[in-house]
Image 1 (tube, rainbow, N blue to C red):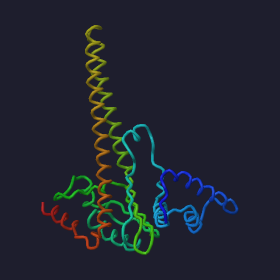
Image 2: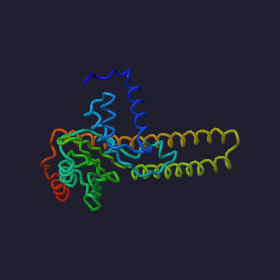
Image 3: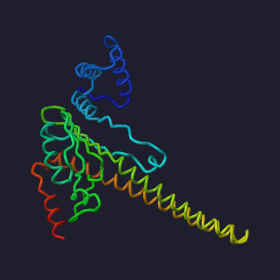
Image 4: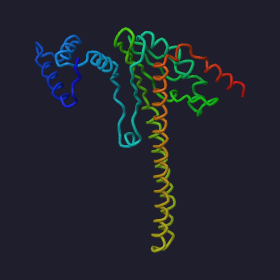
Length: 272
């Protein structure tokens, strides 16, 4: 089958859209068989179309997240990665279900069909891992998320598309709340320093002192905000990287027999 030039891609997609809109009864959806027929008619590689269908089905409709100026300025409320890996949905989810509790300190939350979610453990060990930067050189970045959802869709008998969605909205709200409290404290500090200055010092000197206080408090607020935003974005980047590493391990079949790393961590904690 001849390749389609990139210059013809727009015409191909327009033709596929036209064919879809002319389906009987003006249907709002289209069957996979009909979509493959359209792809075949316009000359698309069916293997690529099946993979695109699998990727679309793996997409998780995320719940509405809280929005706001400070929240949006901090960064995204989720981290998402997706890849085609070898294995069936049952095989992949089985490997992850054995891996997550032992290597990531995540407990199974729910499984529905080919979609499974995990959440951080709510016990002393889980709390310790959330509060620490790591144990024995091993970071536990995923324990800071609200949940990690794996959606797996089969492409054929040997390959599947897997998508990880990690929700970080709770961590983002916490960072926003800490920023608000800090800004309120700095505002109170400014008022405590500025009011006596205006009342007790002469007008000319007071304006200079007040400008210095304002510059100091404003600079502290700006630097604190930048530090908090950088810390949150770095945490999301680490979560994203960890999910990519999980995809690497799935792609290269390295999750078959996870070591009981969590038990080693517990031993280290109790031995202190």
